Image 1 (cartoon, one colour):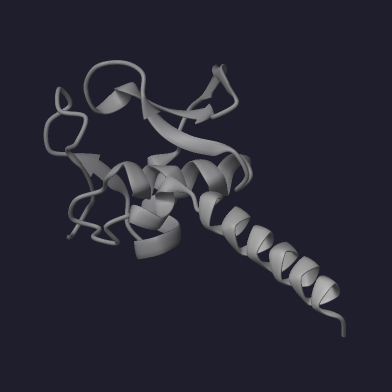
Image 2 (cartoon, one colour):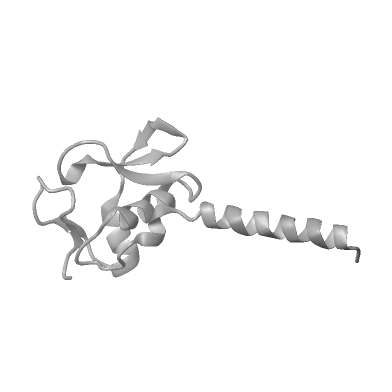
Length: 111
């Protein structure tokens, strides 16, 4: 293989790898802790509900019920998050909040 072809294929592989890194969703930062759900956990649920590509959890209101699934290239596309489904699918229990006024108080019951 010529040096020119090796360089071209190396650049193509690098571009694909870099694209994959940039496309890693915020959900990669989920705590995995059912006792304290975070934005990453909620983003995982958004992606489960609406499709992995482009969906993320965003606090759009106040309190625990202020979270919405938002399509990142169109912030006006906001949808509800089924947090109960996240807890049921991952831990087999219902979701609850310690304090409805606190957006960071979601947890899966029993944890």
